[in-house]
Every structure is written in structure tokens, then in C-alpha cells.
Image (cartoon, rainbow, N blue to C red; front, side, top):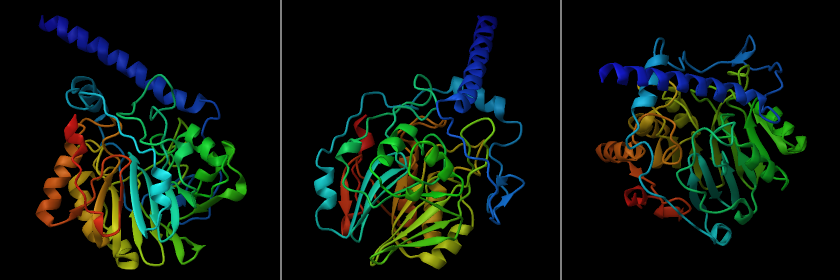
Length: 368
């Protein structure tokens, strides 16, 4: 029996290796490619054809690839919801356009609809079924978006953190691009957007620490993040990744997008804090890649560095991208935040929260 299990495990491992190879290679051959233009950038963060992190960073620890693959195959319990999840908000447009200075609706993962002092922005829009270059393989959504793209209010901008598939979805971008909305993206991502039909005049690209006035007292600032980029075999770190400061006349929001903890959060907090709301990734972490995904405990640490008032977890509860249980990020976050007396914004997907009522605890994940 032991020999049979070993042989079976080997076969599964071999199949998984083939699947991973197909998954990665197809990223390049997908229609349109989603590849940057391979340009050179006058940026202190760009060297020898690639962008660099603000501190030395290893994407995956040396010698851990096979360990990660084996754990991915063998650890399956709890990584996805045990029952179907469904959320619906058919009145999102009316709710967001109604009076109110600061409103937030979490769509899922890192997609957030926000209204700040009269302007409405959407971050990392991802309405696709899979975070993958393939329609039939790759991480699938735990639940459908709580409202459709057609139900969105008029947007003043779409804010992109980086080019990974769970943050930059081609079909979603094409739909939004057809509306004429303005896109704000890190260096190099603009080429991808334009290749998908977004008009060149509707794309603004940023290096770290660059900012842009948006009128009516609003400004947008790209700030450093610790992560990486790439959509195919030849595009690793060929586009920049970034976090964002979204400032209105009276409120400030920090959108972290994706990335690991680093001491630069304190510098950002000193320059642009305090923040009414801080949105930081809390999922997809693992001991084999600690530098690129901070996880919930470090999210609390970064929130304090940023001088945030309320912390909202993003990048969790939507796709199976790591080896932890799907509710572990939020459960760990709740415990860590309690220890540090940090207020949390935990709305159900699609729920609109606002103003002084940002600190909510819907416990929606407990319905599974």
C-alpha cells in the first residue's frame, strides 16, 4: 500500500508539474499576450531591463519550489469554501452616488469601489471567473462579483497596482476601457492597457513618488511597494508595481494592492498620513514567499506605520492562491488587530460602508 501511495503521489506530482508548465507558458500565448512593450524607463527603480524592489527581495525562497508544489498537491482541506457563496447589491450606483464624503464597497480580492470627497474610483478591477490566462484552468472565484460592470456608477478613475492576473483582467479592462474612463497605472502597465484598446489619452503612468492633481482638491500619489510583476515567460519585473495614496479635500485612503512588509510604510505614513482608511493585502501568504506577501499580522504592523484609522483587508477570500485555509487571513487579522487595538472594516462583498461607520464586522465568511 505504501508503495502504491508513493507511486500515485509521484504521478500526481508529475501531472501537476505539466499543468504548471502549461499554465505559465500559456500566459504568453493568450490572445493579445498582455505583454509590456519592453521599453526603457528613466526611473531610479529600473535597471538592466527590470524594475527593482525598494529593498532586497526574494520572490520564492531558494530550494523551496518542490516543497511548495508538494504542499499544493497534498494540502487541500479548507482552502476553498465548503458551500456556495452569493452576494448581491443591485443598487450600488444609487448608493455610491448618494450624498456622502467617504464610501467604500469591497467587490472581492483587491477590487474596491471608493467614493472620496465627491470622486469615485475603482481599484484593480477583476470581474473574471479565473485569475488565470486560461479560461478552463487556474484559481476560480469563490463568489461572483456582487454587482455587474454595467451597474457601476460613473467612475472618475481606475487605479491599477500591478499586472498580475488577479489584479489586471483583460476582459474587465476592455469593458471599462470602452467607457472612456481614465486609468492610473505604474510604469509599463500602460502598454498592456493600450494593447487592449484603452485610448492612449486615457492612460497615465506613474513612477514611485510621482503624483498628479485630479482637480477639486484631489490628488493621486504612487508610492513604493514590495512585490514583483509579470504575465508571461519573458516579462518578469518588466513593469512596475505600486501602492497608492488617494487624497481628497478632506479624506485620505491608502491602497496597498499587493506586497510584502518593509520599513517604507513608515516613510509613507510620515509623508502622507494619517489615513482615514488603509487597505492592505492579508491573503496568499506562505512561509516559502514571506517577502512578497505580508499576511495579516504584518498588515496590522504596516497599518500602524501608515498612521491609519481603520484597516480594511484586501487580497483575501476570493481566490485560492496559497496553502492556508480560506478564512485564516481574516481570523488571524481579527486576533492581531484586537491585540493592537486596531479598528477593522470587514463588510460583506458589495456592502457600502461610509464615513464614521467604516469599522464594521459583518462576519460574512462565517456563513460557509
